[in-house]
Image (tube, rainbow, N blue to C red; front, side, top):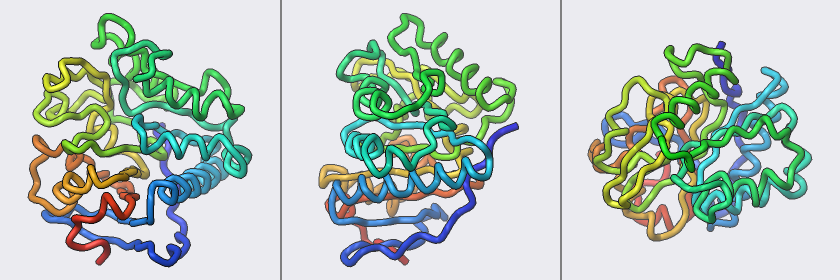
Length: 279
């Protein structure tokens, strides 16, 4: 049986200079937006939300499932989660960690999403080794890797790998300047996937292959939390949230949870081109 997400709890009022509210983009893209001062404030807010969500979910369901993202923005978040007060607030023994995507590199490679999370977070907290479910993207056949990661997800959630995807409690995502998220890049084959949960995705612009979770499983999450920081993301953020629907060009627009919550946690620099921050 798929595990549900946490029951939403009231959020504290944002500090002065921060803005939060529900809004709706064009063509009914409903989401919640929180704008904070800078990347440090973003990481702290994300850490608070992760800790609270994990505690509430474990109290209700007995465990917490999260999919991590790579990149520079979540790196500071992971460092916070590995330190007090968060390192003792999160229920690590009951937490299962997955990844939203992975580069085709060994885990010790500086470009590995797993490697980054291991160094900044997992090696510093008491999470059982068998609760960190990495994508083995260093293997020669990434189609096999994707199939086996689907099977591992299905095993943890106790669902058949050929059925409907399970529901992660929390999925963390980032946004690239080109509008990509996870390893769902513009005009790539994985954008059109409707059944598979995990696929190999060839990215011609980078001349490489990636392994990525797909929209069908990402949209089953109880909560999807985008973390976006920096002025270099401002144009993409504006296009994704306020522009016309064009997921082939802006893959992040594919992320529209079917019954869960979609939240964008962004800093002022990234939000600088938005016409409206809250409704």
